[in-house]
Length: 252
Image 1 (cartoon, rainbow, N blue to C red):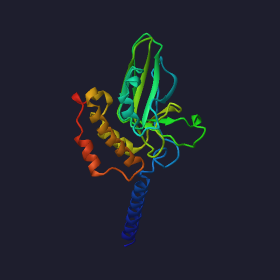
Image 2: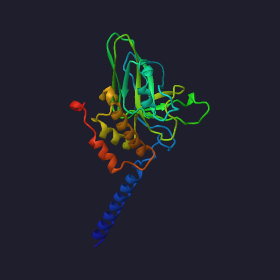
Image 3: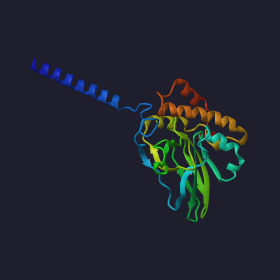
Image 4: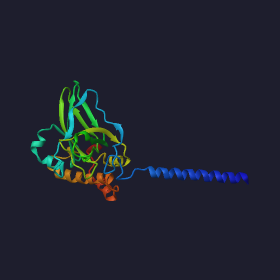
């Protein structure tokens, strides 16, 4: 009898421990609208792996906004301006409605080099540049891997189209510099990155005459990002929209 009681007590203790662990796991799960450095959550962006340039590659000067933050859709206005487009040698990424960045890469080696900006990489605005307002500019994020080739012994002036992760804050500005931090630790962002991995959303997936379609798609994706960073999470309609996007040719 004592042995049976001991076994029952042991089983109750173990089951209680398991339930307790399950509760702790569920409590530790990330919640939409409460990701450090994103939305209105406050805190610092949390990074899983820092961004690193390959040997021989450097960024000349600073990473700065390429668009005018006084307009509502930075990227759309930028794309409509031929005077803007002729100043740059390449456009990369997806988004750009609110965060559009300019940077110059330099390759000091004689060999061609490839810079890889990983999906989920976050760009943090440099608060030291903002003397009049406290933390009022948006951080940006790259939702698909970006590959940029810099030929040997050359510089390359590019524009990056990114998504905003702080709804309600100012868009990118040439008055503010940005820091490439690295890939986000957010599981919710990682889910979105994985869902978009092979979808046609990059600026280079669209011909010049297809920019209206590009803007329509990326407008909606920006709203989806905000549902994660500032809202209550993805809806089934959001997931269906992503599923219905065209796949890249060859799944690349």
